[in-house]
Image (cartoon, rainbow, N blue to C red):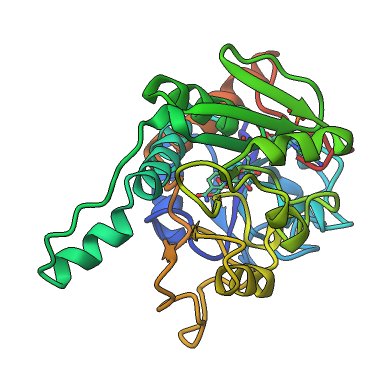
Length: 321
Ligand code: NDP
Ligand code: OXD
């Protein structure tokens, strides 16, 4: 019996691979299945049992009446959650150690960069200025992590190992050794009042959209050696109010930001973020996962599922992440 076809619906940038490379990879991995890159007029939509997607357009999956599983090529599923026609089949997202450790590396790099006053030191080097400033220990700074899921909890443990004080905030209660954990709207203030460097690893949902705004920034703690607080957003661009970030940098509410994600990607060439002296920006590559690892992960899950096993890292459709 022929095995069900795999349809690829890949738009935008997924790590370093084009849609053609993904197709070639899945053809190698599953020679016993038809692998089609949509749109493809030659394929009967009823053949398709698995969809491998990255930011498909709403409605793109509707025609696959025999679809069994959707695999999202990233951790965040916000682009799928807005599709009211998304077939009601299991939706698997990426949660693999390769991605987790890359995102934790990014968080550590950017926390250290601000803590060690690296933007100032780089400018001093360009100016040929030998001008050391006092430096404080990691334990003098509290990093607050919004989102204590797969990524946030790993970053929290790494930062603890380096010596930072770490607090976390999530939707429900969590226990992480050495990390003071808060949850829900009622505990947001306490979490913010402890935080000197705010790291955002939330998913984008109706509840979290725009959460990185002036009201939140003004409640951050300003009493550490760092002075004005710092924000590092690794989650999604629509979590942040970009006008508020710029005005809070201007009036000193924020000392600096690191942004990996933006409301519009790629970032407009005219955006003031590019040249702002207190903005460190990266092109949504905090978690540029290895496509080999991700494609293996998808195929292992299909094999496991067809053998009667469970799918892993299923999205909770009601929660939206
Ligand atoms: P998880 O689903 O494992 O964790 C999400 C966390 O956010 C959970 O702790 C959850 O709380 C918390 N959360 C969700 N909604 C709320 C809310 N309303 N209030 C408070 N906390 C909330 O996701 P991951 O850790 O795997 O990934 C997080 C996000 O990171 C992704 O959705 C994606 O957008 C982004 N990402 C960005 C990358 C990049 O390259 N920049 C790479 C990979 C991911 P609870 O635990 O209580 O449910
Ligand atoms: C993801 C991402 O969600 O790359 O994995 O942003």
